[in-house]
Length: 328
Image 1 (cartoon, rainbow, N blue to C red):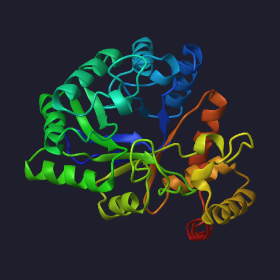
Image 2 (spheres, rainbow, N blue to C red):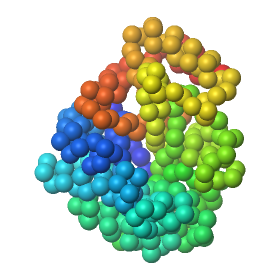
Image 3 (cartoon, helix red, strand yellow):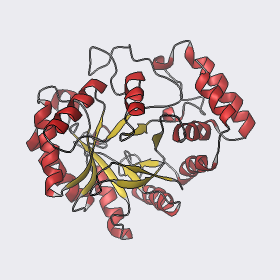
Image 4 (cartoon, rainbow, N blue to C red):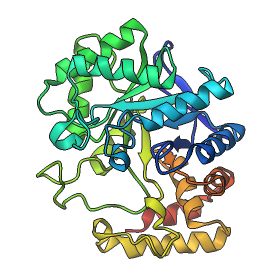
């Protein structure tokens, strides 16, 4: 396993594995026995960075979520897992009532909502302090200063360590960080966005924004992280839910543009040269990219996880990286 540091402050920064394990479906679609086996294998391989959210996975149960956190809490207790494993969770997109969604009825990012969500997540996870807490989605109803102050208060109390943000326009992330810096408060240091080797279109209408999709690591996000090395980028859905390797998983309209076949051709060349799978090439490319990201991989079996773990042993040559990067 390889590791990297996220965060800058001595009291909150963490050393985490460069491959993160997503626990979104643990406790719902992925049963407890299988979830435990995947978690045990991940830790056995040196993995130390697990991702969840307080709303996972409400769409499978018709409830409000929390099943993933609860399962992780039971697993931690049964295995004696302590602070050596960084469990990151998110708040802001939990429906306020069963049978609703976060867009029309989400908890939001007001200070009281942040405090309540953090308390409930700590209880479900069985943790005194959340190592990393994300603002999951935008809350246009709450001023940024209030959100910043709400998160900072929990850091000051020792209830939360690092702060992260996901699925926000890049300009809002920068504005929130500027507000925090001006007030002498801790700011968001970990950014989580959808990111992969193939590039998504961002101009298509999105259910939550009339300006298009904003949860994607596009040029604004990547240039932002490139310019500020104190920021860490965590990439969710790096393997496009199996679309790189499975014919029954089509790419969909987000990838319907001229650059997709060019990049797929470059990827196929490197796959042939290395003998690795397309998934492994994508993960290796991402970890060692000019703007490095921590891939957040899901797994419904130990075998799927092992494929992803093997990507960390794949060293792409400078020529292979140049060809992958240069395909447009």
